[in-house]
Length: 135
Image 1: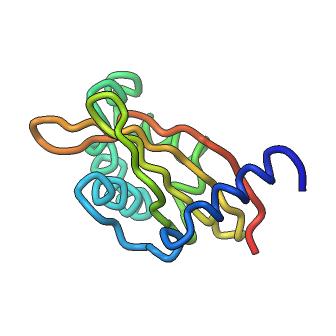
Image 2: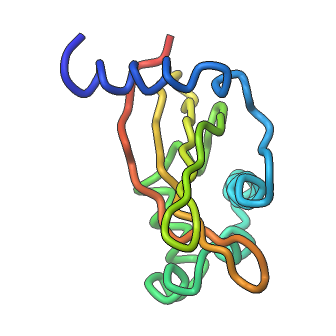
Image 3: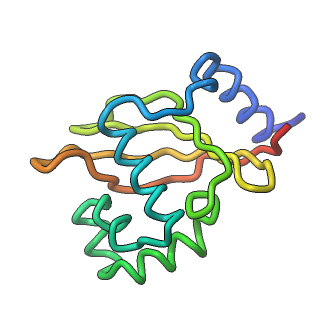
C-alpha cells in the first residue's frame, strides 16, 4: 500500500473506537445526519436549510444545491453507511470528520466545516479528504 491509500488506512486505524459509532452525538453531528436524511428523501429544500448562508448564497436555490450534491457528492446523496469520526475546533466553529461507505463498499472521508449561528449549527462546506476501497 502506498501514498494516499496508506494515509487513509492510517486515518481509519487512528479513529479506533470511533469507527463503531454510527449515531450522531451532539448538535453539529445531528445537523449532518439530518441533511443526509433529507438528501436520501430527495428533499433538497430541507437539505438546503442545513447549509450556511454563504453556501445558500453560492447555489441560490435548493434545486441547484441538490444537483451539485447528486453530481459531486453521490456518496452523501445515497450513502450506504455513515460514521462520525473526530471533531476539532476550527475558528469559531468546528471541523467534523465523517466516513461514508457508499453503496459499492468504498470508503469516503469528508471534512464538514460547521458554524454555530443563533439558530444552531449549519454546514459551511464539505471537503474530500480521501477515498479507500472498503473491506
